[in-house]
Image 1 (cartoon, rainbow, N blue to C red):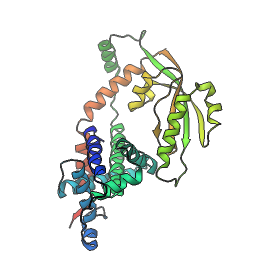
Image 2 (cartoon, one colour):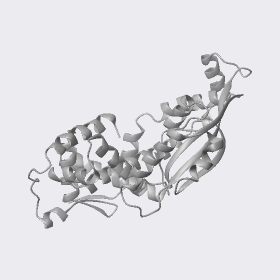
Image 3 (cartoon, rainbow, N blue to C red):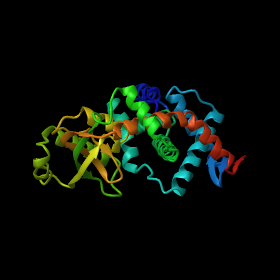
Image 4 (tube, rainbow, N blue to C red):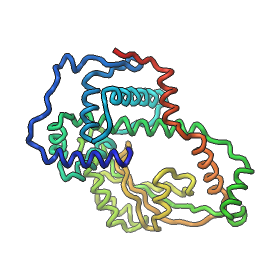
Length: 314
């Protein structure tokens, strides 16, 4: 999610929270709410879906209208369908609930209070969850699309990048990390607040982390915690924010918890060493070319999906 959107959510929710107890926004008749505004490959989007999205985006101080809201919902429906066809890992309830819990925490509300504050503005908590799920699904679909556009990096490209960076094959090195994974398991069907509780437990574990040699003993004092040695990974084998966090984490340190389909996971750095390799230069060259190839990918991909979809407006 864009930073400005998240700020808008937090700011708007602080105002909404202050108004708990005020009169809720009026509702439209049930029949009108369930009227289908559009269908995407036979999946309906109702008046209620559109109205809820408009109210939510208005609350978040985002530019909106019926058309903008409907377009967002169509794109999210297409992304969900693509993700399911491609068997991509979809956002879990725990991951969505973590986003909700994070906002509630920022505005100093419990989940029930947060839900009530939303309701006073005519927005259901399920609407916010659907929005987060759609954002996360889009991100997964775009990552998969981008990875399918792997550029063909030639030796000439690599040599040019090495020259640019002022390194040679004899001096090029890469960081190699020995990692450990600590999983705070969240069983399927757990209540909405479980992700928040397990994240708090993971943060407490990090503060007491005794190093990789002592992590198993510490984990045994807790319930539902698994320790896995995941071996060595170099910096090219770790993607996204985790790669940057690894570079800044000392031996014996841990990365901030992340929610996955298994639970809340913490990565520990057991050892770091420099190894002679041009893999980092190759990876940088690939990233540079991939960025060039994928400029405007989201807009182009949305247009492509719409062109190949059956979208019916009512």
